[in-house]
Amino acid sequence: MPLNRRKFLKKSAATGAGVAIAGAAAAPAAEAAEGHGPGHPVKRYSLTVMGTTDLHGHVFNWDYFKDAEYSDKAGNATGLSRISTLVNQVREEKGRCNTLLLDAGDTIQGTPLTYYYAKVDPITAKGGPVHPMAQAMNAIGYDAAALGNHEFNYGIETLRKFEDQLDFPLLGANAVDAKTLRPAFPPYFMKTFHVPGAKPVKVAVLGLTNPGIAIWDKAYVQGKLAFPGLEEQAAKWVPKLKSMGADVVVVSAHSGTSGTSSYGDQVPYVENAAANVARQVPGIDAILVGHAHLEIPELKVVNEKTGRTVVLSEPLCYAERLTLFDIELVFSKGRWEVESVSASLRNSSTVADDPKITKLLGDEHEKVVAYVNQVVGRATETLTTVDARYKDAPIIDLITKVQEDVVKAALAGTEYAALPVIAQASPFSRTSEIPAGDVTIRDLSSLYVYDNTLVAKLLTGAQVRAYLEYSAQYYVQTAPDAAVDVEKLTNANSRPDYNYDYVSGLAYDIDIAQPVGSRIKNLTFEGAPLDDARQFVLAVNNYRANGGGAFPHVATAKELWSESTEIRTRIAEWVTAKGVLDPKDFASVDWKLTRNGTPVF
Image 1 (cartoon, helix red, strand yellow):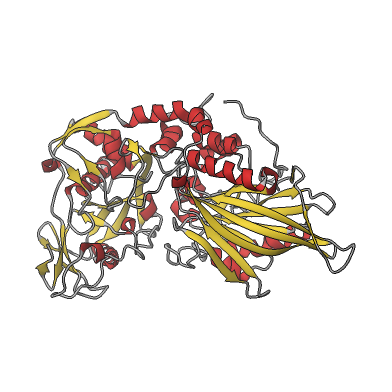
Image 2 (cartoon, one colour):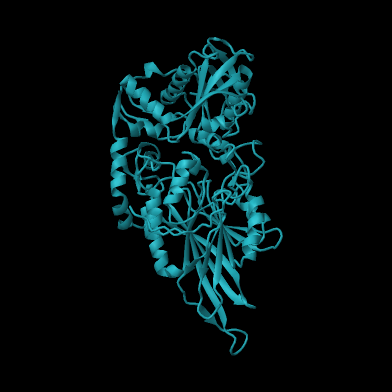
């Protein structure tokens, strides 16, 4: 597909990054209201900033893992094809020349569609395709997008190719060259709105991304890029934007509002810092929030220095919602001032797909549907994750068995070949199922939804014990005589399912009647109590190995081996080689929940 690219960067000789050049909007109508006397009309201008975030490869309202239309209990619909319809409606209502369209990151990872164009038919190949997300976002007419942490999952080459295919800038004021500390991506974007009979309105959009990239994608960015804190970089850039004449400052931030972090003390920055930015940095009018996958129609935060209210909004992920910031300006004393900001959400389930988008990307969609429906083996029985949060499920044992086998083969012939290999895995999904009969790539992909890769780390028995204790925080302390409600058994709101780990190759109980820190009981290896001094090789995904979830010891442990092939692909290879998926080849009962020694189930 040919692209009509705008030139929106002034390239820096040092980093190849630069500053977004202002784009000019067509002249909108300005409203004149009565002033303080005859001949003194007040000029007003209404601007609407639309925003999405955490699209994660959702172009259509389609679930590639289920090979069916997407559906959930809340009746949500996903996809940029729906967002396009909502955007068209808003532009019709407000006047296209009075709107901006932004995104807050995590675009090119998350579905088989994005995996296919990163790995199977990669956009980086010579004469390769244009990324479906680039095609869709260009067609819808995005003005700018912030970098998300998942933009880095496939490496910098893939990200730069995606960036090159866009008609709009990818912003990241706090994504800097590791050596020069100069911006590696455009920090901001500015657009001028011409108002008849009055000075133009200048809108600046500052993009901020997540410092956790330095941990989660360390293999790709270490020594190349650095990611300082959002508050620090906003404090540096917002005054610059104001000095350049910005009447309105909007931040697009791939960072939640909670002020919390999942990476402990590994980096000195806050993961979910958007509300901190609003509170600490003067001069911001609105913040489009991302990363947390929450729905926040409108959050008002008072700036500590000015007392002014900053309005934040986070639309639900996967293109299920569109945020609208309605910004009212008044012309006073020779300049525009923001009089009010309000935020609201529009729901993708209320509209149909835009046929322009479905026609544009129908071929790409069909290719991916065919790919994920390839049969790679046969299952002797149905395997499901329904109970995997609180019971040792064979389907999770499949993941750990594959990881053990891959690491053992990789370490064969090395000085570590004789060490026992254990493996971690998390119950990512509550709905994944591998049915009896034919097993397809999509069945296996639904089991392992992330593009994680495998790492081998060297741990002692004592460190493994601490790792398990940390993981066991996932459960709510439950008295021995209390009724068990499986929906209330875990701390899933504060500790997501992906931050609970099984560890294979050991046997242990998790006593949920006990307080956090003293729940792991009867921990054994090969039938004997675990020797704290014994060394183990932990087969672990790269997210956890780099410190994701802040599990103890693993991030600082010696790395023995790593690879770039996705664990999901390794599972498919394992099943293809076996031909038959039979639990007797991988299932084992390694752990159980107890209360004062009595099994819960």
